[in-house]
Length: 136
Image (cartoon, rainbow, N blue to C red; front, side, top):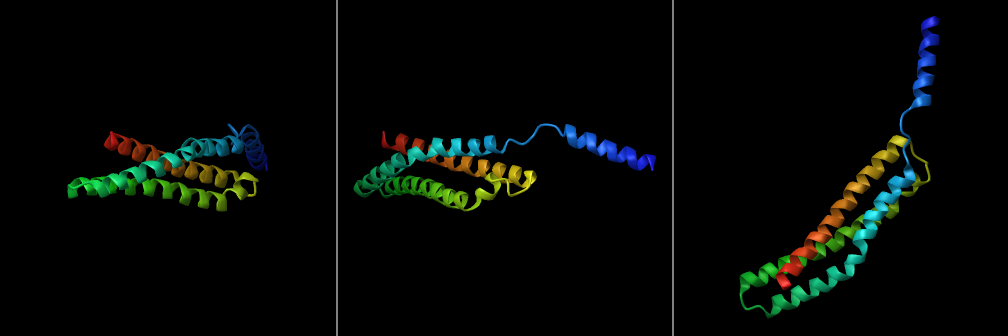
């Protein structure tokens, strides 16, 4: 009986002291900040894509035209990556934001989404940089 009481008391102390709490709002904000950093660049992505496609059409060197078209495709892929991520995000974040899932599920969800949107942001930034360098 003493062992059971000790274990119960120990479990209560561990639960009460439980370490740092998960700040769900901060995790949500972190994901949205990454989105908000990348989303305004979509207009630039579309503009650069059009410029590359026009330059590729006017290019007489087929290798250079292929390179320009590949950069245009990379920009399109980056844009599509954002759209795909946003559709998935809109369809899945609410239960986690509302606290309808466990803290562990929330942590896993927001960590996964942060990783995904970071990749989207990086793809957008890298494709913009490559396109600008080529159009100079």
